[in-house]
Length: 388
Image (tube, rainbow, N blue to C red; front, side, top):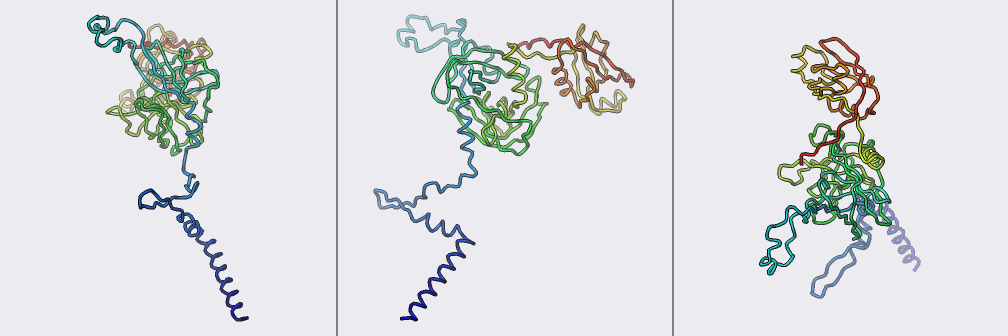
């Protein structure tokens, strides 16, 4: 009997030692053995194995970020209500006898659809200017099902941004992130209403920062992303992995209207400046010199017999404008504004835009290899003129 107890004790000891080793070195073996034992019997003869609740690994999920930001993203349905483009058959008695009022005038149908982002509890919504441009009636649909008519506070076609406002309570304003701290490779989510199918979230990474030669807007500083951005996403949110707003989705590079993995978003750094100016003054006031700069290419540098390729060559000057009155001439090469150098014409235009009207700016200019200093009284940039 004593030998049996000794054998039992030794067996238990060895078993516990093996259990300790397995749980220490291969814990997944233990979890696996417990997680696959639950089964579900159907009315048929089949038996399905079901994972235990909360067994999924959620460390790579961004559902919390999406859940945090999605209520702040709205759908915008903008319509034209003018009465000049009615269907000629609309008022025909014979036509109305069979179809009634089912066919609405073209002017009363949706003319554009896009997305927007609730920026403040006071109902300010930011979207793209091209979403609401030329429309008279704007209907906003929230993620919680509420709808409201919006009024236009102001627009900035130069950056393709617009601020509208709705009058509803308990609005879920989005939290602003820090686009100036974003890096290439950061995970981002794009939220919007592509093709009118309903609110959708797509994931990608930041592909590039500071894209400024896309040729979409006058002033560009885009975040480029490979998150799928399709028609209807315009004005929607680009958020970081924590659900904070990094930018407003504005455009895509596409040959057929669909996403090819190259989308552009206006960063928060630009959004804050434009939105504050629109809410305060109804418009964005920018500096103006009345010049048309171009980048200096290597061929141009050789043709003009100049050494540097940084800066901008003045290709055109508005007659009677601030630069013309200060003595600037076509062919001048400008390299600095108020002591700050710039690399190309895009940087130069952004620098000029930041100047305050009626202030004086000093420009370093090279004319026929001679350095000059011009002092120019900054004007106010004329309002954008739509082609419509």
